Length: 279
Image 1 (cartoon, helix red, strand yellow):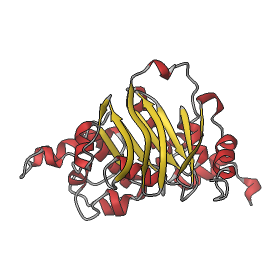
Image 2 (cartoon, rainbow, N blue to C red):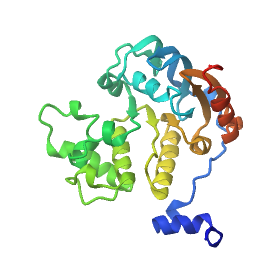
Image 3 (cartoon, rainbow, N blue to C red):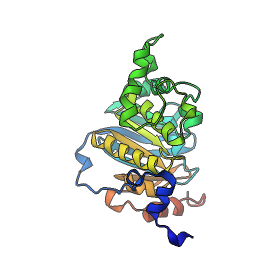
C-alpha cells in the first residue's frame, strides 16, 4: 500500500543507497552571469527541424533547453555539433566564428555533445571502457595509440564519477544504464570542453545515478564550463538551469531568467506554444 511508504523508503527499496539518492535541490546564487564571458552564441540559427534560434551561454552558466518531444531541440544540438548541416545563421564559440563544423572540428574548438541515445549514438557497447572514454580524443593520440594513452581517461574518471565496473577492459554493454551514462560523460569530459551540450543526460538511469549526474553538472558549471542542458523533464530543468530557453515546433517560443524558472512557467510556454496553429 502506498500509504505505508514515503519517497525515501521507495528510493531505498530501489537503490539501497538512501544518502546518495537524496534529490538535488536547485541552489540559488547571486552570480550575475551578465558579467561573465560568452562562451557560446548562436544567432538566427536554422536547420532541419528548427529555425531562427538565438541565445547565448556564459562561462559557468547552465542554460536549459526545454520543450516537448518534437520541439527541435535534439536537431538543434546535432546541427551545432556538425552532425547535421546548418541552413543559415551564425555560431560563435569563445568569441570566434565556428565556420568549420564537423564533430572533430567542434571537439578541437572546445564544443562537445552528449547524445540523447547512449547505446545508438554515444557508446561502442562491445568495446572496452578505456576505448570508449577516449572516443572523442582518439584522433589526438596518433594512428596507433599507446595503451597508456587509452587508459589515462579511464584512470582519471573511474573514481571521480563513481563508475562501478570490473576494470578498463570490460565491455561498455555489460554495465548498468547509469554506469554507461557515466562512461559517456567521461568520454565528453576527456576532451576538455569549454561548452558541453547534454541531451537528456539522465534518461534511463536509476535515482542514485541521476543525482550523481546532477551533482556533476553543477560541479562542472562551478568550474566555469558552459552547459546547454536539453531535457523533457521540466523538474530536471528547474533543479539545474540558471536560465531557460523554451522551444516548440522548431521555434523559440520564450525564455525564463533564473528567478522565473519553475515547472509551471516552463510548461506554460511549452504547451501553450505547442500547437501547430500557435507556432
